[in-house]
Length: 260
Image (cartoon, rainbow, N blue to C red; front, side):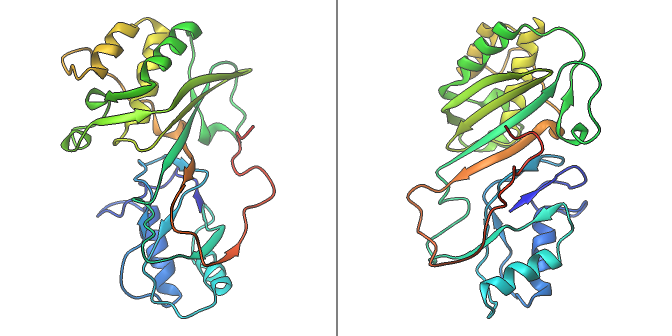
């Protein structure tokens, strides 16, 4: 599935705000499901988008998969779409069977943002030191303690994480951050991006980032970039139980406005 997070309060259902999980649960009820809530592969923050997202539900629906797919989309708003529906073995879990995720952050650095791209980028006006940002990016690659780059909620669990990819791509006025790894803490990618932008302005040096990644929480506070520029790009399930039946297909066009 995929969603545009601009007007949504993230994935996880909560007392206030419209969430993706809440919308999918309601769509499932509308087609006859009763019982367990849908489980997502990740908790996205309010305003964050998902180019590709995976969820599972222990379904109580006696319908062909094609009918389930059509029924879900008929009962979801346009900013949330389900591309494919699978039957999977009971051992599959959208979160725990996930072997890796990749994210992209889109930073617009010059001129006027085209209106159709505005919901998907964060605008930065001012100089940025590209080499300093790339040095900071490389400091994140590997296994580190990301306790200084998450929220208080994120620090309630093991804060050691492994990052397999972190780097910037320049496309004209657009700077694209590519980040990948097995799993991420709450708001971790946005904090990583904030640290790199701070390095690009000279407000943070690579050595301070390295100290933070060694578990030092006493350094400068690392800001999180705004949610709107972030997209969960892809989710991998290497070694997960294979589907036994599938309905639907991914569109044969780019899945995201800034895809390249």
